[in-house]
Length: 211
Image 1 (cartoon, rainbow, N blue to C red):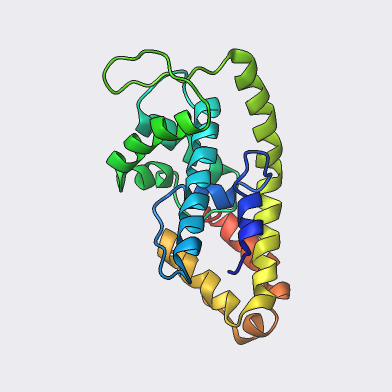
Image 2: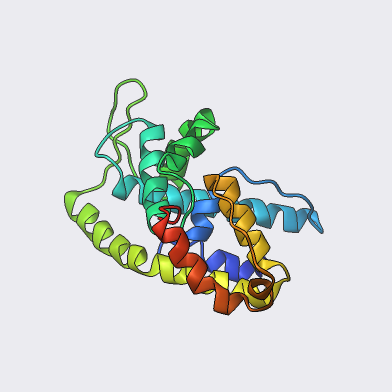
């Protein structure tokens, strides 16, 4: 996928209706190459914005208090529920468990950068200073994102059919990788991915693969 830095930055704002970009780039990522030191710094800055956006939603949607890992797990459970996914329900916890120290260190730093205060807490327990009214507003705002999440995912997948060859084979590979369910792709499905997509979608829904 190719995005301009302006497009990327717009999708890292808390006001963005698309949750997929900031949710993915708040997770570990690797900068393979940069054209200059300026571009390198810009990319790092954008990743920081993704983390701050995610951390802000974690504070508003997560528990009133808890460990950093509990806030991140609650957030990723929300983002995965708002998308068309083939992973099982433990995926949100698995993401955090791959780098628990990273997520524990990032959350209070991101809250500070996002202007979210913290009440005194004992040990590893964190308590963001979020009012009940702010939590209710966040819940209403998130309901719109949850409603639009799957249609946006489906639109992105359909666009991919025109972007690169082998879209159906890639989709089948990804389904098998995350669920263990093997999907056989017929020659006509490779030629006409848009016609094949609805049937494949409902087949995977019936088998409980797509959530």
